[in-house]
Amino acid sequence: MNDSQGEPRGGISRRGFLAGTGAATAVAGVTSELAPATAAQPGAAPAHGPGPVLLQLTVNGQKVNTNVEPRVTLLDALRNYLDVTGCKRVCDRGTCGACTVTVNGRTVYSCTMLALEARGMDIRTAENLGGAKLDAVPAAFVDNDAQQCGFCTPGFVVSLRAALDKNPNATPEQVEAALAGNICRCGTYEQMRHAIVQLCKKGG
Amino acid sequence: MKNFTYHQPTTIAATLPLLDAEWGKTELLAGGTDLLDRQKDYVSQPEKVVSLTGIGGGFREMSSVSPPGVFPPIITIGAGVRLVDIAESKLLAQYPALVQAAGQIAGPQIRNMGTLGGSLCQRNRCWYFRDEHVNCLLKGGRKCFAQEGENQFHAIFTQGHPCVIVHPSTLAPVLIAFGASAEIAGPKGTRTTPVEKLYHAPVKETQREHTLAPNEVLVSVKFSGGGPQFAKFCNASYEVKQKETSDWPLVQAVVAFHFEKDSKIAKGVRVVLGHVAPTPLVSEAAAKSLEGKEVTEANAGLAGEAAVEGARPLSQNRYKVQLLKVAVKRAALLAAGVKPYWEG
Ligand SMILES: Cc1cc2nc3c(=O)[nH]c(=O)nc-3n(C[C@H](O)[C@H](O)[C@H](O)COP(=O)(O)OP(=O)(O)OC[C@H]3O[C@@H](n4cnc5c(N)ncnc54)[C@H](O)[C@@H]3O)c2cc1C
Ligand code: FES
Ligand code: FES
Image 1 (cartoon, rainbow over the protein chains, first blue to last red):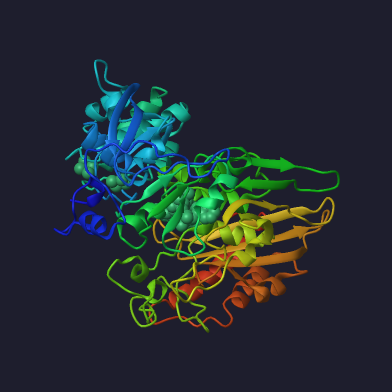
Image 2: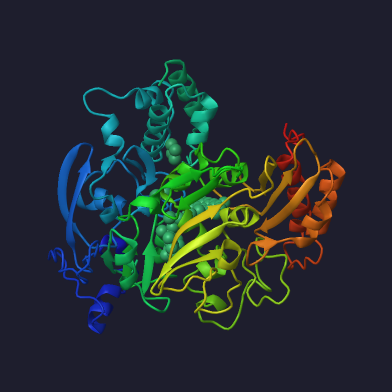
């Protein structure tokens, strides 16, 4: 468990230690809302935190609220505070792509973005491709048996959808280049290639 | 990650008073692709994070102007511009080296998040530095563990360097080859400096890989091909990588020069090397070797030989010497428009 989720790491609570030194006054569950501005000039920015602050996000078209400390990543806010669990936590270091979501139409690693940085943006997760009518991308994955354990799949389908939205006439090679930031540990790449060919034939 | 207070000012002027005169307690945040990793690994533990993402205007824009008689156009890129926008920019048609370098950084997600300023100010990737439990020279310790340890990805120009990191940015060597200048805002106002002067080899905790003061913000960079009128500005960046994507290169070479009207003779040659020294390395020897010559395979090869003169590799990275020779040769040939015969 990593303490960006609000939990002590390795049994030692750094937060407790910090509170003891007076460097932090975090009290879980208390919303410290926006403190008064530090400087009376245009553009001056109030301090948020270190305690939990109000976080309002737009996730898959819905406005949602929670309270998080500034250190909470978008991934942890989605999964642990908002119960949007399509995005997966694998490396938590911006290298595997399991946590991929789109922010204003562009793919990002949600583990490598602070939740506070996503305020006011249009966040879309793998859940956005499911629902009553399955999107063509996950449908092609089903048709081509393009997953084994499936843990990487939500990240892949979000990246793939974004690539086709950006260029509906993309060639399979171009789509593959757009998936360079996603890794499948089961090595299901060959079946994913079949799904990509099928999608490119259909024009996205 | 240690917790912190977070600020998101909307102007550079409002950002400056939030910064400290010393490194450590406050960090600027742009795309976060470098900073968040360091925070998660407790390599950086700021108490205050000042986000630059609320700042708009020129900080997040790219512009191109062509005054009469100047060719190619003068480009200004705000430090907040995302890497993807550099990689896909139409304004940069005359500057393929920058497009190539930006397009090769990591994968799409990192390029969508990471910024020019973040690439230029990112911290080094040495695994001793990045390890929470290793107290190396750059973290207040007494020793550079790479000198005698696992150093296959470290510097080969090591003379006089107590710390043998390689500078991580692949955009910095390109901008240096272009003779770019950086605009920097600080408590005393705005200053302009050559990008080359942005870098030094750090040897202690109170230094970074760049020379910005802790209370300064990189605002933009500016460059032009700068040659005589109607000259063709030729430039290319060539990287040798262990993996096709999602990795820093093993070595990088950037070559830039002019062809005067209808001539095939390289003039004003600049050669800058990446991932071989603690700073981007300007190779006067390689530039001199190519100056005034036709860019043939043989002459490009000689420039490669010249580039590695004086290299003093560590115990595990002698292989980089040969890679660097080849990278310089290929960058020069690509800049001259030679078809990459080494592909396929
Ligand atoms: C797998 C992988 C491969 C990569 N390969 C390459 C590569 O080949 N070449 C390459 O160049 N990079 C590479 N990168 C690094 C990537 O380019 C950087 O992580 C990115 O550019 C950082 O930008 P950012 O906006 O996310 O910076 P942040 O993480 O937000 O900031 C990085 C640092 O720069 C400082 N900073 C940011 N903006 C400014 C500013 N305007 N003024 C002063 N200080 C500032 C911050 O305080 C911080 O210390 C790679 C990264 C990954 C994960
Ligand atoms: S969990 Fe974010 S990239 Fe791996
Ligand atoms: S299906 Fe298991 S990681 Fe991709």
